[in-house]
Image (cartoon, rainbow, N blue to C red):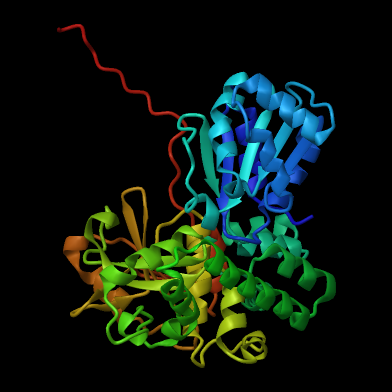
Length: 451
């Protein structure tokens, strides 16, 4: 069983004094159902599962009255198994295929006999009409492919080694060259394999990249089938064109998505819903331009200028360049592969909770990413070649006093090094970049004695 960080989030949800149903969403094939089954095995006396995609007849449980007694009676009759109150987790899998089940959540949560987790592909969850959403009775979590730390654990790296590396990241001190070289090899393997659980498991079991590649191509085909199934009829061609164009658009020098490359008559307003569709599906990760690299970044966001990354770097490798896997595993990320390096950093940042932005100014140049943590903004450059100490754009940003940026990070092949405001970090240390979390409590009381 692959170790997933999301398991801790499920445990926190279960331990909450009065929890709602949990809606776990994400792109296809990222391991949602497997995770919930493992969670149930560890924490519940009994477990019941309805899969509305594999078993369409399961929707009949929700055909009649939606009062709790009727629903529970229908559920136990259909499953033909006893469900113990306060000890049972019910999984409603692929819930996008049964909109009435989503509506029924309100009544089931109010009833309180069982715990409920809904899982579904974002493709359907966001694009199927639901009679009435269970507002106030449903908590949402988004899940991603395995990040690099999870990949390391799957590959056999010990948690103590991760902690050791984290200490060097926090202290800004270099690691030994032998450890650095090994971690770089692991990172290159992750670039090729990516984070799709089935792909990772096959690689861990066999060490055969060719077998992993076959599964990746099957997943890409599945995504194309989902586009045909879920996208609105008027958008199918556009969505497919955008999806297939992501690798070539990223391979362009400036990485920015150019609509004119799809069709000379393409306009942003005609294609906007198609971009949103891929983003909502969890298949594509947008990175929007900002006109000012200061908080709040969303205030200066320009939605008509953006880069579009795939949700998984392994899928990008499988879809973009022939036989690129061999070059990458040999350490060659410098020959037209800067886009792949940027993609892996983008998916790591998103998985850790950052919103993606980039900055491009006439006087400063372009910085690959600018992310926000609390009120602090951090510019990030991704260097896939040997010239990682050349970064005029990030230097220009840090030198602009009005922006008050205190640090810039260059992710590169080199070891940890601090040079003025620039911190050089190995590419693999992106796994430690995380946004500032919300405080556990924020007490504030107004003194009313003078009123």
